Image 1 (cartoon, rainbow, N blue to C red):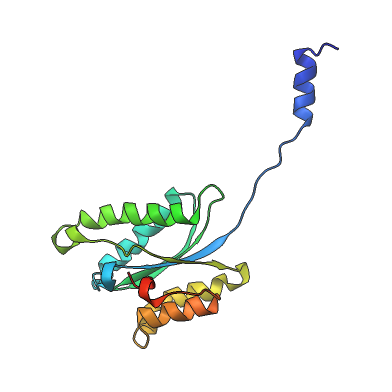
Image 2 (spheres, helix red, strand yellow):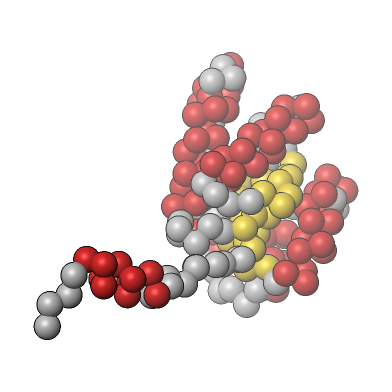
Length: 167
């Protein structure tokens, strides 16, 4: 049986390719190297959070809330279906490190910690996580970054080794 191009084209058009959709929300947390409080200036911190949001957008990950304090950041974003968590964090850290280092002075030596925490967020919990990130300054008047991360790890059932989690 011979199949002509017209027959192939009409048959192919009947095969509808399904669209791939994903809505995965993640809460990513990482610190400055050694948890140095390098983002003490609130105006600069605001610029940094906006820049991190732009980094996420560039990776096709929608920033829902970005915040943090002097020594760490929280990113609540969607995760694009075309990128892994590890690649998302690596690229956000790489690009933002280069941007921070261009600020000169003590920032020339800036680095993020090697590790990170990344946790799935149910759509129904997104408003609570946004509120949590918005309240970081108040939260850290009473709790250290280490206490906070331990609480988040425990809440998500994640085991950790104290010898390595604070790199």
